[in-house]
Length: 98
Image (cartoon, rainbow, N blue to C red; front, top):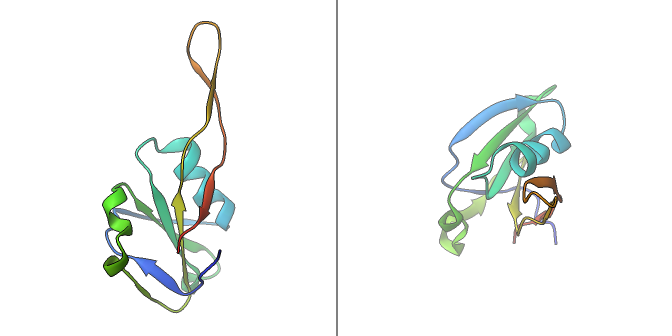
């Protein structure tokens, strides 16, 4: 379920990306400690990607209204392994918070 125009306190990183997918990919693929992102659409033409690394950020009293920001929470990571035990794939399992 999507709740647009909401943000979650506690973000640690902000960087400009060209689209939502780049922000989600950064969380899921690049940053092992990422638990979610807030995406700010008010900084067009780029968007700001704010990263959460603490799952405690997602307590109800830490979620608020913010025009132009959508929040996503990582719900889990699926990995597949080779016979040597190394990670070969990470599924994108981000779903909208709230």
